[in-house]
Amino acid sequence: DTAVSQTPKYLVTQMGNDKSIKCEQNLGHDTMYWYKQDSKKFLKIMFSYNNKELIINETVPNRFSPKSPDKAHLNLHINSLELGDSAVYFCASSQAGEGDETQYFGPGTRLLVL
Amino acid sequence: QKEVEQDPGPLSVPEGAIVSLNCTYSNSAFQYFMWYRQYSRKGPELLMYTYSSGNKEDGRFTAQVDKSSKYISLFIRDSQPSDSATYLCAMSAGFQKLVFGTGTRLLVSP
Image: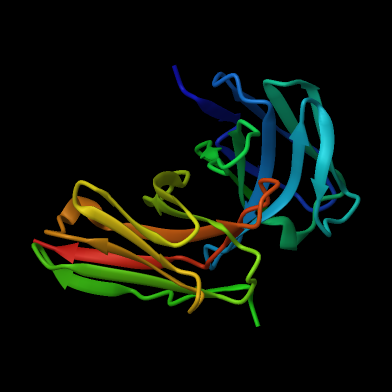
């Protein structure tokens, strides 16, 4: 009955590889996000989708491509992985509405690029 | 200069102490303010949510927002070892684009 789930939890891979992280939410929310948390715990938004439409796209390299097959899923594909991509990636979801900006986070995917 | 500034700590207190965590910000458009708690190797979980200025209390936790000073606080009364975590402030001007502080690591010793 996990609200926001991510797979895999851990990902160790070589530089240059392509990898995907999956996210699913069962809260019925219409907006989903990807965040990156660096080694200093700084959490920064990467992308946001509302009803499968991209609404926030921060300055992220084009090697990162989000895909939302439906409202409950938001996947993140990363091409040509680099050492600097090593971080914890969090998926989150929320329900768009006036006066409520709260977001609910998944457990995170720890990516280590060697 | 970051939009949201937060002392990274660590902040070490004995059990039972009152803890004060703070953030300052520069964007006067922020009107939604949140505190998240993050345990080691877990995702952030929402603790408190406040709209605009004022206070909000929930059990041992009190959130304060002073928009005139661009300053928000989280107070934890009767702190417990289980409160040991990283506390992240977050704020938004709307449209669900949250900007986070760097987090303050809190250690409560028994």
